[in-house]
Structure formats: structure tokens, C-alpha cells
Image 1 (tube, helix red, strand yellow):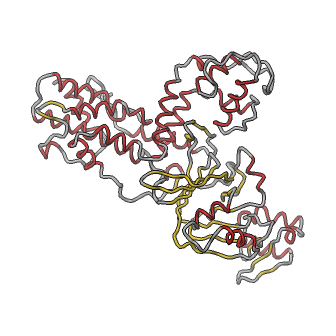
Image 2 (image 1 turned 45 degrees about the vertical axis):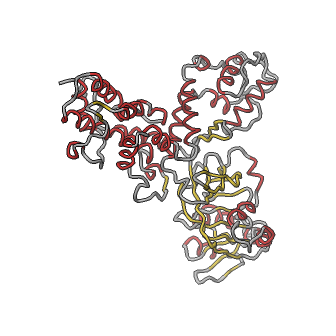
Image 3 (image 1 turned 45 degrees about the horizontal axis):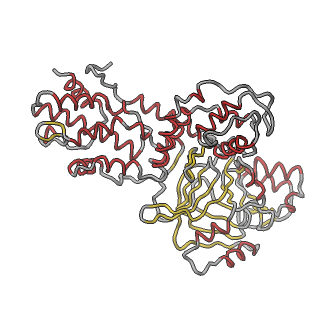
Length: 524
């Protein structure tokens, strides 16, 4: 038996199962014309051999073995119908396996703490989709369209190729020289400047051909600031420990980070509604956008503050915004009351009045004076504490409500100075927005009864009121440590360790795949 045929027999049994019609029963091969592999079959093999461009592994789709089988079937003796059917089935199943991974991802988002409401049924029937693309001889174009269907997919694939091309670059073949002290500031000399300049040139932060500097100054200093900006650091031009760490991350590691971001895009529901508000947690940024003719148009972007990485992380999910509360009360969550508010009141009873707080009994009665037994009632769960609307209110003067099991919402803050920090994980889990008026205008843009003046008036009234939205608006809390903006690639720290979780889940997924067929037709 020829090697390719042995491989094909093995592949039929080891590639992920598919709902495709079995060529052995239909008698109509998908990939053959006149008893030879068609041009579409050759294109399919080329596609499978190039899946690394999508951040996938060609070995998972038996690309090499199928490629050899198709070449030999094209140049060797004509195949009998049974041989054709077996090779045809193997190539069909490999392509469907790849297309499923490309369009839907390889792991369940819930495995990595992403509770997105994904559709029960896939939007695309891959069996019909593949058959149609092959019959119409547009496989390459159709796969390219599928690969780039998610927002940011095309620029991320370009970034992946660019960083992979840098892997053998000489700038990373030797380590940077140790810093002369704890940090290197503007104007100081440093033996590692030539290698630093080489890396910054390779990354596009420093113009090629820039003369070598003996001190950290001029164009080199500005390039370092650009690098810092692209890596979630304060662009102060100081080469300290955090900047040093980012400079020493290799292009190979960056490529892996980009591949993880591509994987996330496959199941992050960024196009599920015509208008959306999306928070990217590691970037500390909120974007409000509209989808028109399949394209995303960003209408608004602002800084946000998210949950502390240590103990109060903001969860990832999507829900419908249904209410806006103006001049809201802050009903202090029981966990915060137990751990923070009650101890504070026990030590300083006057804190209750100064912060505009009050007790609320089980039957809704409001108690504004302090007594030790009131704290006991709070700790037992019989009473709660809330903060009245006003300048001290932790929610600021507006709250955007999208009901969810985690009691997470968007709100303003009486401490706007925190938005000037580069790292902004300070909250108990809820998300503080930098420009609440702009966000309210976006949410209410189709309601002529709520111009900006009325929004500001309701926020400043000091009297709590709730507005039910006529049309709910999707809010998505997402997670991507790589973002392409204006053609520049930005990297952000893995704030909550979700990239590590995803990498581990992908390794576990790969371990569950059947053994790979070797070119000699044997399975190890």
C-alpha cells in the first residue's frame, strides 16, 4: 500500500468527528475531478499548512500527511473509487476541524472564567459552507473571510506574522547589559544602549538608521517613551524594572501572546448587537460603538477603573443594560460592609454622618443615628448600610445598570484623580467610568427627551431617580492583552492571569487530540 493511502486511512480515524456527509456513502468526492485531486484540494492543503498564520498548529490538522497524500495522488497512478473516497473523507474532516477551530475557538470560554452568552446553535453550518465554497471554487477567499470575521482579527494576524519574523533577529540573540543602577534616566550613559536601540528599531519605535547614542537622550529617549506607551507603562523615558522586564520579552513570547488574543476573539461576542459598550479589562478602556454594514464604528472611548487583581477581580460576561440611576444610593454590599464599613464605624462612629451613610432595616425603615447594636444587625444580615446621594457617594452621580449575578455595574466616582494612573485596578469589582456624561449621551442618543442638559441636571439633583431604557444596550466585559490601534501593536500585562489560564486550557485541549499520523503511515 502506498504511504499516502496508509496515512489517509489513519487520518480518517483520528481527525475530530464531523457531521459531514460521508463520501463513501454519497459516492460524490468533494476534492476530486477526473480521478485526480482538484485545484480546490491543493488549495485546502495549502490552507492547512498555513494555519500558523491564525495562531493554530498545522499538526492538529494532519497538514503534512495530507499534503503528501494529495501530491502523490496527483502525480502517481490514478486512484480507485475506494482510495479516492478515503482520501476525500480525510481532507474533508481535516478542513472541518480547522474551520471549526477558526470560527468558534478550541476551548469553552467558561473554562477560563469568561461567562459569555454564546448562541446555542452556530451561526454557520460548516458542512454546507465548506461544500459550497469548494463547488463554487472560492475556497481561499471564503476561508480568508472567515479568518477575519472577528473585529481586530486581520491586524492581529499581521502583528503575529511581524513578531514571528523577528524571532531570529540578532537584537534578541544576546541579553541587554545590566543597568548601572536601579534605573537609567535621561542623559545617563549605559553600555547596553546600542542593543537597546537595535531592539527599538526592530520593533518600529525608533527610526532605522538613527545614529547610535552614548547616552539616553534625543531620538532614543523618545523611542523608549513610545515603547513604554505601547506596553501599558508610564511613558516617562526612565528605564526602570518594569520597562526592563518588557524589553526582555522575546518576539517569540509576544507571538504567543498575540495567538492567545486571536483565540479569544473567536468566542468573544463583539458583534452580537448593533450598538454595544465594551470594556477591555487589561487595557483599562471602555469603548462604545455601533456596527454598520458589518463594520465597527467606535463612537466613544474612555478610561475605566476595574476590580483589584488581588482579590476583587471584575468578572467577564455580557448583559443588557436596562436602567440608568441618577444621583444613586450606594447599597453597600454585605462583604464590603463586613470587611470595611463596620470596622470603620466601630472605630469612628462619626464616619456614618460624614460619609452620608444610613442604616436600612429589614422592613425598609431608614435609621440615620449610630448605635453599636445597629452594627450587630448589619453583621447578622438583618440590616444593611447605604450611602445617600451626594458628593461623597462612592458611585458618583450616575449608575448604569445591567442586571447580573455578580452585581457589577458601571458608575462615576468622586475620586477622578485615579484615572491618571497607568494601572487602574482599584475597585471592588464594579467599573468606574471617566466620562459618565458622554456615556449617558451614547446610551440615550435615540431618546430626544434626554439631551445633555437634562442628563447633567438629573445627575446633580441629589435626588435618586431611575430611568428604564426603551431599548436595552449590550454591555460586554472582555479581556485582551493585545490591541492594535492606528497600526501600532499595544501589549498589556496579564492583569488577572487569564492568558495563563487560556494557554493551559489550550495545552490540555491539544493533549486530548488523537495521536498524529507520521509520514511513514504509523501512529506512535
